[in-house]
Image (cartoon, rainbow, N blue to C red; front, top):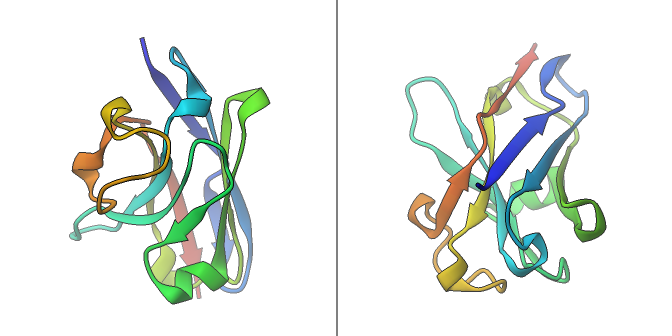
Amino acid sequence: QVQLVESGGGSVQAGGSLRLTCVASGYIYSNICMGWFRQAPGKEREIVARITGSGNNANYYTDSMKGQFTISRDNGKNTLYLQMANLDPEDTAIYYCAAGRPSLGGDCRGSGSTTDFAYWGQGTQVTVSS
């Protein structure tokens, strides 16, 4: 059974930093594209970043996210990370870890929509105050 467990969320002031962690179990982690999504109140879930199975390639939903967030993975530990810096109140959301559909392989094929990902964590709340 595939399981993803996030941690590291919390409350910070604007300009602060957080590192989210997602520990995966139940499948061959290194063969799968992984991603971080977020969902703010009243908004749709959106992708923040995704990373290939090897960890050699990552892409971000927007250029600003590329400068603010860093996605990485440690395949030896079956762990995915999201380093977040210079946080803004607009970054307040529930952040979800997601594992890509095995049929899409480890190179993050697809558009990065939620339908490209088959498994989800329970989410971790990030709250940024001004």
